[in-house]
Length: 402
Image (tube, rainbow, N blue to C red; front, top):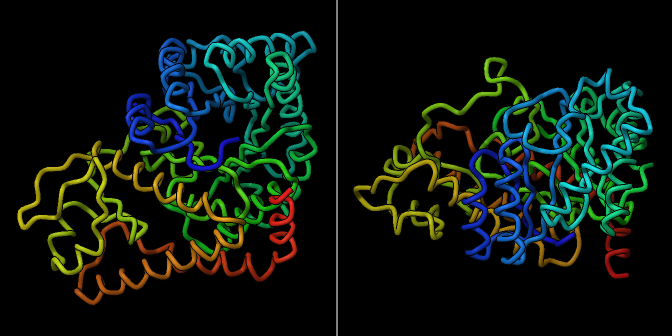
């Protein structure tokens, strides 16, 4: 698994990702059948590979009876059924699913086979057994193609309420004969996960996976990717929409049940120094030039400067800017040696961002998104990790040098 930032597909990602890779941002691509037809995926995949990106196909069985027109275009779509039906899969069904997983990954030139999996929930032995069957199909496909097989571990909110519940789920998942882990965590939070306890449980879960000695891809990480390498992840998933900044099952619900769009929101400028967003231009024009100069982070998709009369800037360009800035920062973190160094780096960055937010507060500006709500708590979670998991982090240092 390539170390660094991977592009997490969402709505209209295919061209955005191509543009980012052409600009040197990102090392891999996670294709989403929910958002891209099989035909178009087959058209774009060779272009990504030519630009040096590795490819994974997330089969997105999280809510297995969800369907849409794009999913219908994939060969294995006939296996999308309710959990109660999938648990009755026969050996013939598993063999057929393996053949179809193999066909999809071969066509899209995947670097490894990403196993389909239902969201793990506390006390659901049926889901544990189903995911073992789905993994068996993926493993057969991987062996057929001569590719490694990566297990998908999406920890649902019923299992994220405590460290004990999360670890119980992980004990089942890590029993799979996997070559790596595709790890996601469902938070009960809006926009960006902020509370210390769930963030701590998430990074502890990631550390458990990393301690197996196998690579971890922290999926649906978004801005939280700043923390990924601190718990030993090899890679982290970056997406342009807020619904890609943490795993949310709402993306797999019909629009009338919560799976709809984001409305007519203004552009948000993602600042590397704030490690967060600020509304453009409404909030920026309230600040003096001496302060906006500290906030401004240039990219190929940002305005040349924050002028006295800001130029129009759309949400789509803002999305591309965010992806570019986060990818650049992740590239820097990925070059550090070891999880502890990554944790200290992230803490220093978050503390510097807090100081900048304090200067904004002193100007009497209240940011609409409360975008500084998570910085201090993330620092606390990382400091707890360093204090409470010293042996595990030292073990990661050791196996990282083998």
